[in-house]
Length: 101
Image (cartoon, rainbow, N blue to C red; front, side):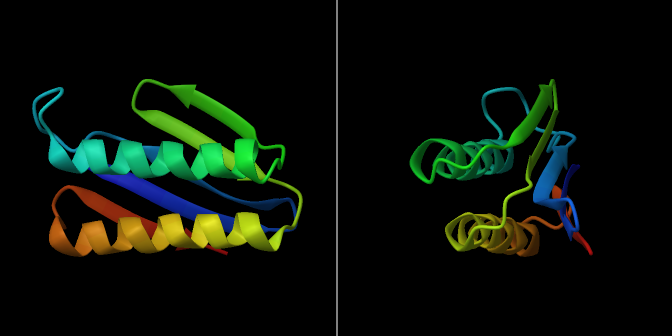
């Protein structure tokens, strides 16, 4: 199962994605949808909006956080959360979205 944790606090906001959807590599639609959305959001914040982010990535795990408060970056992260929440409604056995405050 993919686990998407969104967090917000004094030190900024961001997300942490971990796990696998369980399908065959290269053929799992949920994994592809999550990966595409996560990289689009991260690239938009860092390359288009030009906000520095702390990023750590390993196989099956990505953590992304921004310390700087920015309305545009917040909107992108909110959009990612909405997208993944909708995916979790369609595929509840494949993805879980959690919000930490």
